[in-house]
Length: 282
Image (cartoon, rainbow, N blue to C red):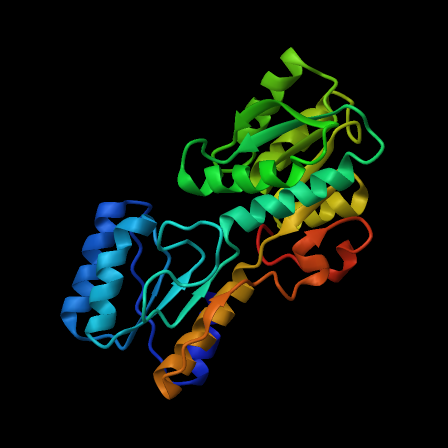
């Protein structure tokens, strides 16, 4: 939002914020009210319910409002960053399936020379489409490596380290010899705390999703193996630049993956961690 505001201020654009607090029904009401008001030339949408938002996105476009999708898929295909509603000006996100592929690529690196390589997979919220797509991308990527096996799963909830702490403690009661753990940065922060308390720092290779300040610090000091970068500031910048282009020039930019131009394609390791700057989590 801070990056969006910079561009808005420099170009005479007023931003009005609506926050549905993760309530899909409230977001739908807010979206419909914004369209009906006739006050807005453009809407940047971070959708809570991707498929459910399609009719209102179509309505906004039919009313002449430019729409930019940010961070979350609006549609049913979780493998692509491309817009899935005709007329959308831009869709700015790393597709969830692609994030899972990146997870898998790092896991293959972490498992090099380990046979068998036992992996623990920590979902954010198991069963939601986003996490299912991440897992599918992960599974598809490691499928050709018979030495790699997911031996346990957990759930971290995306709400800070507590979920990762609980999940890691549970894992260690069952199996204290797994080699790799993957999950969102928040969960991996919790895992790092438990492993440090157990004197196991460095024994399990942690791979995060998010590129937070904690992740970059952990990768730099060796307590984490790697991570998939997260770029919320870049996403906001690209989204508002796309909105400005749509409003001023009627140009539509399509799908924008913010990690496409990141070092290493967004894969952070000890070798390139110095090329990254955290955009959140400080």
